[in-house]
Image (cartoon, helix red, strand yellow):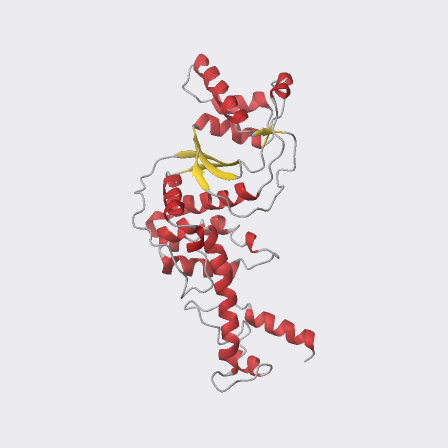
Length: 307
């Protein structure tokens, strides 16, 4: 076995998923004995055999990536509890292993994956999904770029056929529960540093004394970055429909029709609401120049709040 073969062999063994009780797999996917494979390139010492020595690296690799996902989902961790959350993340990572040079992307598929795995959330599946969606929206809002916003003069030529672009960091969510209250409570009571750790068995979980009670209530949120902080802003249904349509590059006139086609508001009231929507969005810099919607910018983690 040359050096390259050795490196590949060890990388494959180190990154092989753990068992459900967080131990190294005794066999490979083809049924080969891991003990025999490891003995072929790792020597035992006076305290540990070859399998036990490699297991240390195998477990630490997985504890590290599980910890990276946990850092992005502290509220999901708090709602599910440590044991269920750790099993959930391990199961998720088995199907969605790291494919990027950065740990930032590890949790990107978790909300979508969780939608098909209700076994981890029993009767609270919609609530758990909302929490996961909001926490990932926070990551996306923090990482995505800020494009120079439109100024007052830019709106002078806006017409029904105009397409208005929204900031890449703006995330729009249609939720079944007011989980912004829950997520804020977790972030405020426990710093993110308390969630991050290297080992599942030794992770320092936040001791959240009391989580807000959640009753089903439809909520529409705009998650955005303002002055290098991420905020959650509740918006009404028509504003959500309007912004969602604009985000899809639908012309302004058609977007307004989409937003108010089924509205019970009078025409005069609609005019007032539209003025308010545009005033708030412009004040927060949500309207911007044309851009690549998927642009990302890297930062360190900012504070979180409601605005």
